[in-house]
Image (cartoon, rainbow, N blue to C red; front, side, top):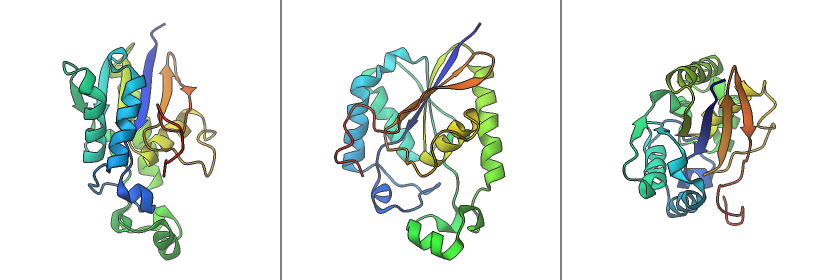
Length: 198
């Protein structure tokens, strides 16, 4: 039976992550700590063990993927539009406390991608990857909200636990034979202790 592996890697830290601002599709670069996080992760990731490296089109994800690929210059980075973060409409840039007090639910922010839309996008992405890259090891650099939806889809809402944050530079592994399943759930940054993580 063909076995496909999908590694979901969250981009490194940005200043908006520290401030707890909604980022969504806003173009916010990695900060120095985020760059160091990804560099530390690259030391243990073994990029050559991955057949395909995909990234969200957003700059912070592409920058993360490029750092991960520095040790393997021959490997090509491919942009996958469906890996983009959930849009939060006019809430992008707001502190979590601000949008919550103003709108209550992410779904209610004007211009935000709906729960229905991002759930369907997650399903479509998983279906596409299992068909297009059957039997491959796929590393996908993406974003906190979308990765949460993907994990939730595969585990029927069991992972991640409610209220648990996925840290920047964390790696989660899904596996597909006849269906997608969770192989490894690790919310802490890859290759470093949680000390100093914001």
